[in-house]
Length: 259
Image (cartoon, rainbow, N blue to C red; front, side, top):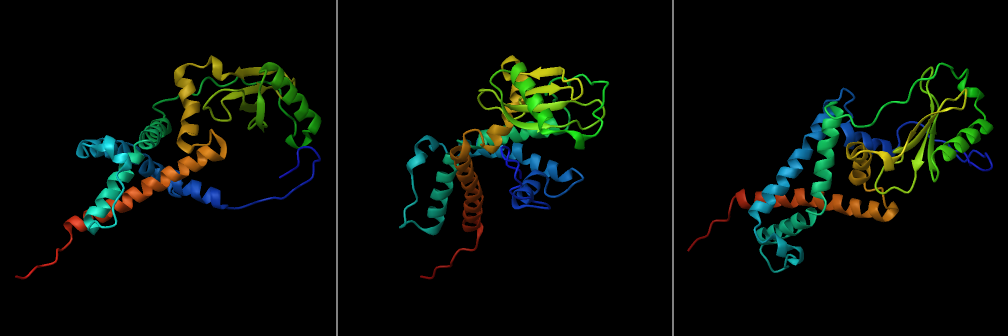
């Protein structure tokens, strides 16, 4: 981690961090073969089915947003009331998560590829990435801002392969798009702009590709939207536990009574 103004190294990290651990668990269950991704992805349709069946079985759900469980209720009734309350509040979140997971599943399989065309490859090759200087980065950043006015740069990627481009991306005032939606591809040797990607010029399919991530992760509104998504995730987790409790209380052995 380097101070972009003074150039002072502020710290470094390596190995597995807590965020990377949680992401790998959530994304593909630590299964690098890809099977874990399908296990996670198939839960998207399950969430949507759960939402539909919940609405079918809870007919008065529109009035259920304020029906809190009462302490005097029997355990079965109390857990049932809690489950219904959590269920109706999860309706604000279930469609978003379910539909974006279905999208990821289709995108992963290659059935839907709407990311747009790749930039044309250059013929010149950056001799050595270690020779890139701060002046080079400043020049590329200026070129990107000229090619895409209003661009707030959040990342700069050096070429991955021979003939590749420098990719500069960020935000340009568009709503609900990920950081790499607006981008400028630059030939690192000649400084020529090879491609400019603007959200304002995208069709709805390509736009949706860049909107799915902010909707799924809730990072579009800073800390406040993240806290709302976090709370919604807790509601979904609690919904699972309350459902198990209701099922166990309904199907478990009942106390016998004697006259």
